[in-house]
Length: 387
Image (tube, rainbow, N blue to C red; front, side):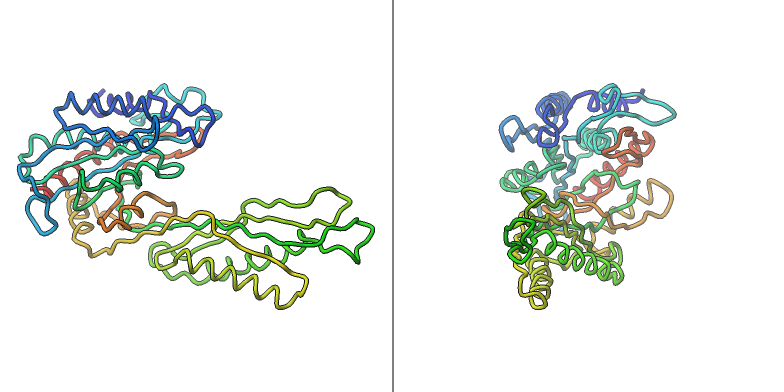
């Protein structure tokens, strides 16, 4: 077993299930203690930041010779980023007993994303011997799988560890992700008139009225996906998620609530999503005088995009291709990542991580050779970026 695979095994063996996703989730504290102890043993500067009670971020730093980071050349500082929480382990036989078989490591978090974390930790350890001018850093953050309070806390104190760029080690199959979708959650409510089922002339069925909303939203989703506008992500999308309403079978329901998710692409905003849904409701109301509805956005995360020609993207592409001996794709990712938060803070961010399968699934695995490649790519990027 190599140093890297042993480290990854140690990380997987620690239960760090997000407590907001599973009632019995252990949280990230034990894993944070391990990372901090490992960092001290490796001779790195260690900071522990409480994003919330018992939810600690760990920031490891390999200090460079230059005390000042600049965005214009020598002495620039790079931050690697990985989240320490995992999703739940329902139906997994032995989620925290890592097994290596046929060059793959199995266990919860092996792919998403303790492999990227392990590769980042070992790259940072190697950075100590590179005689860099700028700082190389790793932020091991909590709660990415739920609310991203870890990265939000990190950015709230960014002056403590300012970086000129960020590489997130999420799994990408060794491609470079430069874009991903965002999302908006919206509650739509229709209001009817309660009445006994035997008196239809007095009742207005709020659930039936919501049916008109569902039909219109489905048509809007199909029109969006039929007209993709982003070269990597295609189009946004919209789907109904949860619906509730009514009190008893013999009553006309006075109320119905629909929760929808609108996935967004770069250029689409929360305000724009709110406006498009209001237009749909207004059009239904114009055709039906008994239709009464309202919509309220409850949570949103922005999409992300960095230009393919950005120097950071091209630098990483060149280094990755030199390590892999093959062309490296620039891709868009369908899911949301913390890169959007860094992007909103004005920090150029790219994503590259190992190959594997089973994120959030019953069987999760990562290809160990790809983790080794990631460590080498991260180390070489640090050497080139922070020189």
